[in-house]
Length: 348
Image (cartoon, rainbow, N blue to C red; front, side, top):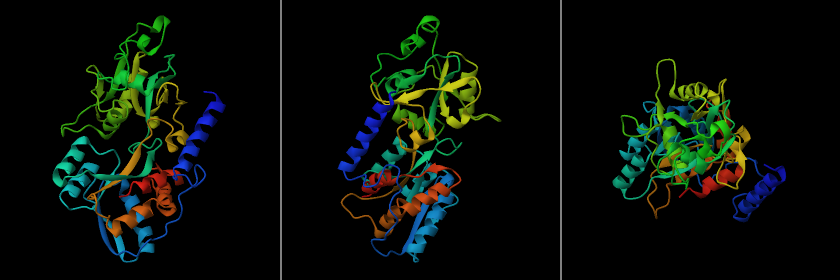
């Protein structure tokens, strides 16, 4: 991609943000410091993913320095986002820590219970490559494969049978993805995680890929599903299978790279820039398969958010709240000022 083209695209994107009032700071600048709008007191109950438990503690301590009569208590019995969601539905939690996007079934259950949608706010980027840390997704092919890049429509054509992004057909041969010569008629062998668990829900990564790439479509029937086994996680297994299969392609995390494979650059659509998935590209959300973590909560429409909840969310999205993310062992990626401004705008 021509450097001047990339500069023009990024400059245009920054200008558009400034014109909408979401980017009052230079790109990459941190959010402003927290400034309370009102003094608050009381306790918020949090439950969900244990990979965010230490972060919740740090946020609670920082928030308490501004509001000595306020606190956030995390339910240590809860280890999964699904458990936090169940607690929210039962009125046993005020905040759910989501290290993935909510499942469709969770959104439907909330809508059925309360009659309005679940509210979520993006509080940080997922990690770049921390295993178990909501990492960005890499697409792997065998090292001998001459393919270097795909659009999301082409990626949908690799993994799905419903083709909601407009691919002409499911990719069966590498010729379908533009390769010629000896590669034209070679089969595309597709590797991925188990698409649905015994609970009826997919793994979080599958849920992300289904929404981001397949647009809620159906996975191809001949997907070679890999499962966790003793001594080998499914994401490591996917990369290992691709390393041993010159015709293979699969998704995993950048932290699972090994000899015999390479990753593909990805573009949102034809005619848009391709991104290799560097840490900077993931942090800026340029890379199409960057991920996020969220806080979920109950916000009845037409009613003001309780002041304690509103002030806590404002703190999380401040410079202090994002600095806590930078300190956290999971290496989630703090939001810059423009990203945090967009997240604050989503607070009811």
